[in-house]
Length: 303
Image (cartoon, rainbow, N blue to C red; front, side):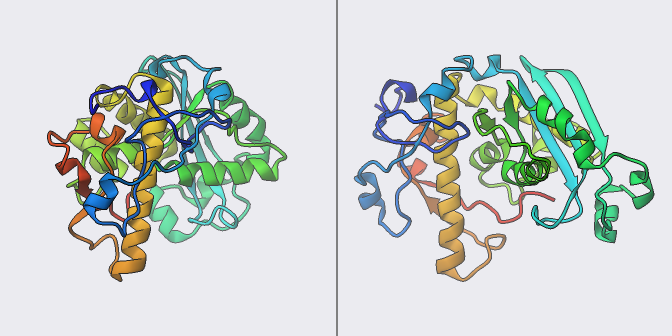
């Protein structure tokens, strides 16, 4: 059973980057409650996960056949409601190759903190005379249509771009399949203390020469995703199910550690319990019992 493909048997709902609903079943596709013992987790009834069949059917069956827009932003801070984007990079990949590159400095119409200048090298004078987000919103929105969307730490970049688009009367394309290489990095490099883009790129032998510049970070994030391809299912729907399961398990563990242990995740040591499932089937564990445990994900994965 452990070698079966996810698409052959799933009965659960999986929340992922698409939007409709289909019933599928896989006896392993669930994330157990952290409070349970390992034996209890092994026999935990299937938990609902959600995936959209109608939306997935629009796209190629294999995710590598899907054109991908890899996006990265630099911002004035961490709060997408109050801080603003100062640079956008969108790199289009097809079949693993860069086919188009878009980069734009943006006038945030507000002060750029000194720590942001130090981190990115983007100075206030670099933004003088640059367009506001509203002036380039239509182009950015168009570049996100008809493609899968990728970002390293997707929730950060998506949060900012979606907020900026909303201010302009536009919407983030929620129907697009979305991928976050950080989720895969946390699974494949469980024992690395840091899993930020620079660390993972270095581990994979991918040059990152201009860290914290949007266009370059986006290109590197795309190469990281393709570097993981031989460890991931080829089928788009299978990959979305797998990503959702791993993301859910990682989020549960972060919440559990934060609320129950009293220690910060950055300092937490030990192992996290998770259920057998696609994470084992496509992961790098050799023993299904050992697959019950993975390293604790760290709190700070983005510099």
